[in-house]
Length: 125
Image 1 (cartoon, one colour):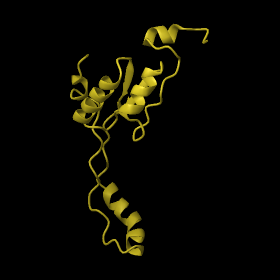
Image 2 (spheres, helix red, strand yellow):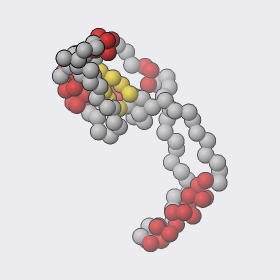
Image 3 (spheres, rainbow, N blue to C red):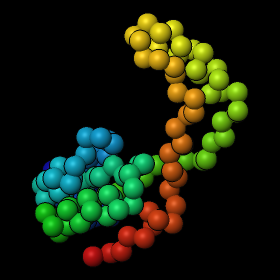
Image 4 (cartoon, rainbow, N blue to C red):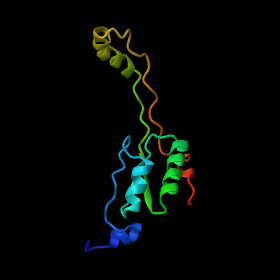
């Protein structure tokens, strides 16, 4: 038995175990299984569209009535200097040439979206 129950009492869990919310490996099934076993199940939500988070949250609620965690990335927006794409293309060119991939991409992908109002639209059960 864990001697200090403050964390368990605060989170309404039986065991002082919080599942790591690793993006790409956490599923609603895993999060609900951890919660059902008395720990704090977690769902990684960083860079997921709000609708996907909503669907996965509903899937957890279908499997468990216990507490669980939604983990988001809260990052500052970044500004990429206009010279970066050209520098990137030149650094990638030898590999593109070696593997016959044609020209490297001309643009960088858009930066990941930040945590914002859309992610805050979740309601309590």
